[in-house]
Length: 265
Image (cartoon, rainbow, N blue to C red):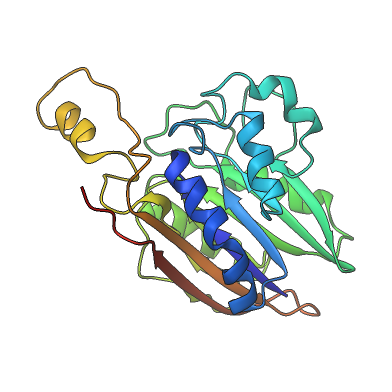
């Protein structure tokens, strides 16, 4: 079973990057199932229903969220009907929807779980470790490939978490920091891991946002908002996972990076 996991989609340029390249990536890598983190897909924060449907209709099979899950409160209107949307499992606040969803892919069961980390995050969450442990214990008789999107800030937290579930889940895929890390590997007991997949968005921005709007606020103290350059150069960061359907262990994991044509003027 080959799974393609896109890093955080940032705004319109990120959505276009994914939708423009999805079909050829699926063909090139013989992908069976596509996951994307969509918590930044609407103007850089949150996910409205129209953009959720745009991605699903464009070929994404599952969309995960993160700390910006409530940045667009419209999500409350559609989350219970969005069967391909996975919000963080360990939220203290109940917003509906599911934190772990089981998909049937040609007779193979794939579970996708979304977890929020704790360090430097403002959201109120239950323990990431015990939340996933409790979920797994409740699925004692389930024979599924299990992909965990661990949405967290700190690399050490992500690494420690991956070791805690090595051999228990098929892969722990880090999201949130928008910068693809150079540590994709298979752990000793067969769990695929990367600290962060990276992001899909403006290649020449800052974490997918238009660079001058970020510089104005971060460096010069102006109270400007982060903007999205819809004409920015498209970039995709993703990983490909090859999972053994019988053992549910990861056989291969490798990152990919795709750049669109650079625009001038």
